[in-house]
Length: 241
Image (cartoon, rainbow, N blue to C red; front, top):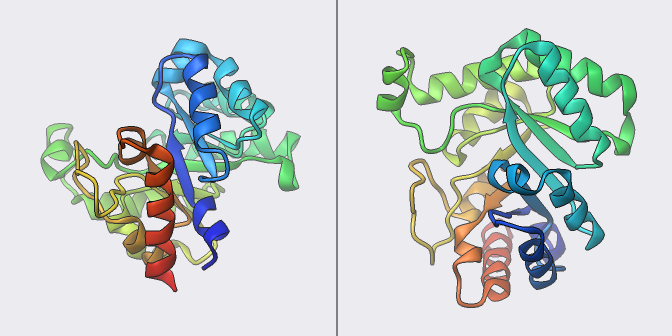
């Protein structure tokens, strides 16, 4: 794997508070990562301007808002995400097949080819454990739920899923080689686990078949964020070579 291919797998979690911070991070990480993740905190604070700010710097965007509502509402929200020109957008697979199918249909009617964002379904959050699931009445194991939801997402027309790196192999077996897998819960060998429970190093995740890695604090909290991103890129290339 080339350095460029490895860099393009890194999605930086842009967990910041304002547009000035976006400009700073976009400049710091230019040419060192493949995409910026705009999540709930930043989007609630700045709205679509956050996406546009990244795009002004030439950056690609993963809009990580995990929509979960009635089918028509989610479909319209995903369509608006597509109109923002993002590369990835997601909803929550626990919303069910009808919700996902309606969203897929809405986006596909208006967008096609390279202009269409890839639509992802969140399976089980990487902070969740068997205890977490039991507390909300789900008796299946985390792995069983992840595979069940991934299959449902694929059958509903979604392009891929967001899932822990620990489930990459299971998802690949269940959904095939062309199904996108985006993995949070990735921590390079030099970083702390923080609040993620089901983690893996970047090299391990890519070797297992991850298409994209969402990485935040190991870069954001580093003394030299750009160097940290370079170390992660090197870790990926060395593991996959």
